[in-house]
Image (cartoon, rainbow, N blue to C red):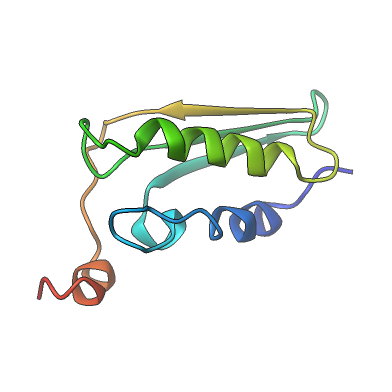
Amino acid sequence: MMPTRDQIIEVLKTVEDPELFLDIWFLGLIYNIDIDPIAHKVTIEMTFTSAMCPAGPMLKEEVQTKVKSLEGVEQAEVKITFSPPWEPSEDVKATLGLI
């Protein structure tokens, strides 16, 4: 049995950006979650706070590892995109003291 979207989101909330100290779900770095129950595969489309994010490779690996650890997931793929570029939400800006 594959995990639900909500279960995947909960595991994504445990991945923290090491520079901003906020989880990647709250930051809005996750653009899409695709669950393929036939292939037992989850594909995550995400971005980073910038194209030059030094934590990018680590974040990608952590997302892949944590999603793949969920029961029923045999494959986890993480696709990185910068289209559209990341734009922090008002909640993120407020949390970071930017507004």
